[in-house]
Image (cartoon, rainbow, N blue to C red):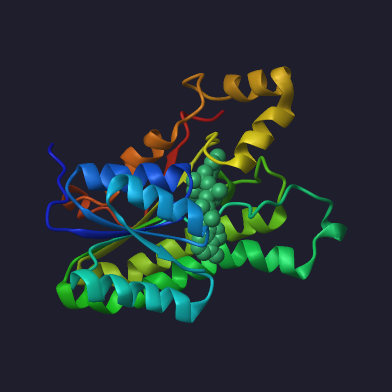
Length: 251
Ligand SMILES: NC(=O)c1ccc[n+]([C@@H]2O[C@H](COP(=O)([O-])OP(=O)(O)OC[C@H]3O[C@@H](n4cnc5c(N)ncnc54)[C@H](O)[C@@H]3O)[C@@H](O)[C@H]2O)c1
C-alpha cells in the first residue's frame, strides 16, 4: 500500500510539540501541504521555519479564532482536506485532589482538548462537505477510554468527550465523504509534562509502566503519527467513527 497526500492540504493543531510535529512531518513527507497551528508562538514558528510549513498562531478554544484559522488555510490553499486535532494536553497541570481543582483549570483543559476540536470541525465541515472529501483525525488518549495516568480529572473527562465527539462527527459527516476517527495514544515522552511525569515515577514506577505494555517499550511520537497518516489517507475511506489505541498493547 502506498500512501500519498500529493495535492492535499492538511491542518495540524498542537504542532509546537512532539506528537503534532511528528504528524506534520509525516504528512509533509508524503506530499501534503501542511499548515501548523498552536498557541505557542515561538514553538510553532520555529518548527514551521525549519520544515518549510505555514505557521498560524491561534487559541483554538476560542470559536472565532478557530474559524479564522480555517478561513486562513482556505484563503491560502483554496482547500482543506485533512484536519488533525492534536492540540490539547494537560496545559501544565498535574493531578490534584478534587477539592483543589478551580474553574479555570477545568475550563482550560476542556477548551484545549474538546472545544477546539469541535470549533475546527465546525469550520472545516462546510468546505469538506462541498468537496465530498475530508479526513478528521482527533488525538484522544488512553485517558479517553479509562482513568488517566496523569490523575487529572478534567483531562480524563475531556478526552472521553473527544471520543464521543469523534463518533458523533462521523455519524454527521461520513455520508459526505468526510471521515472522523481518533487515535488514542499511550504514554509518550513527547512534551515537558509527560517528561516530568516520567521522571516522577522513578526507576521502579518506570519499570512497572513498561512491564504493563505488551511490547515492553514506550511509544514514540512517530508511532502515533503513523496511525494518523493511515486514518488520514485515501485508503482509510471506509473506516470512520473509530478509536484506535496506539499504545503498544496494555494489560
Ligand atoms: N504525550 C503523551 O503521553 C500523550 C498521551 C496521550 C495523548 N496525548 C495527546 O496528544 C496530543 C499531543 O501531545 P504532545 O505530547 O505532542 O504534547 P502536548 O500535550 O504538550 O501538546 C499539546 C500542544 O497543544 C497546544 N495547545 C494547547 N492548548 C491550545 C490551544 N488552546 N490552542 C492552540 N494550541 C494549544 C500546546 O501549546 C502544545 O503545543 C495532545 O492532545 C495530548 O493530550 C499525549
